[in-house]
Image (tube, rainbow, N blue to C red; front, top):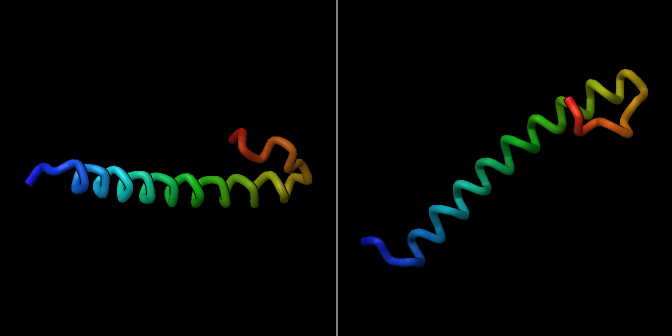
Length: 45
């Protein structure tokens, strides 16, 4: 079954997983930078 809808669902799941992973990374990043009183560049780790 290789319908467009199943492909889309797979892509969405993958994006959600990736987004979750990035959110986790950004949270650690933000905490680290926040501890250093420099959250302007928190996304640059």
